Length: 214
Image 1: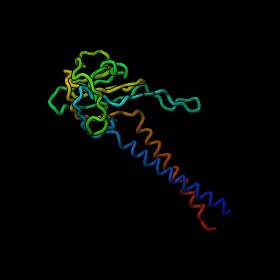
Image 2: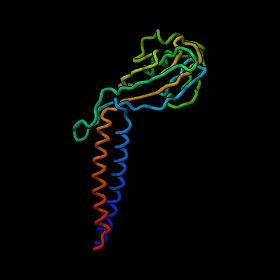
Image 3: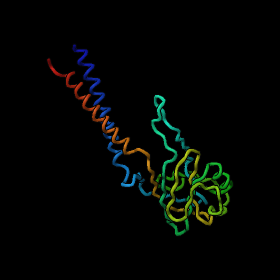
């Protein structure tokens, strides 16, 4: 009997911890998006003396997730948005394209490989020529903007975000805010809260019976 009570208390305690984590995670998932469903990053600034700021390569795989032969999660694209403005009075271009196209376009050009989602300057300058043909003259961008707002439906593929001055001159300095809409996030959050509360209730019951004196 004592062993059974001990097991009940241990299992109940684990369920309480798991349930609490699910409730907290669900609450965060519900609270993060704004009224339109966007999750927005803090504003950050990146700058470099190079011709282009090139972000970390983005590998996207949106294949459906299956459980028991049924589709659990499936989407074709995730809406993303970048709001940006120049900090050195130069007109700025932001574009998204396949890694291969960006690498070919900027081959032999001075670039700075940076984490575009952290507030700092460049971290890995690759030396090269001090200018490039204007990015606005290229037709390989899947999404691009010079107006301060870039909307991009993130789809399967290997992508790179590049930031340049519109005239291709060196010295890029921008402030950027990134945002994305994660499909079903609020629904997932609500589900986590419900399952978490259920886990807390069951766990508390098991602990009660495990420690109750007969």
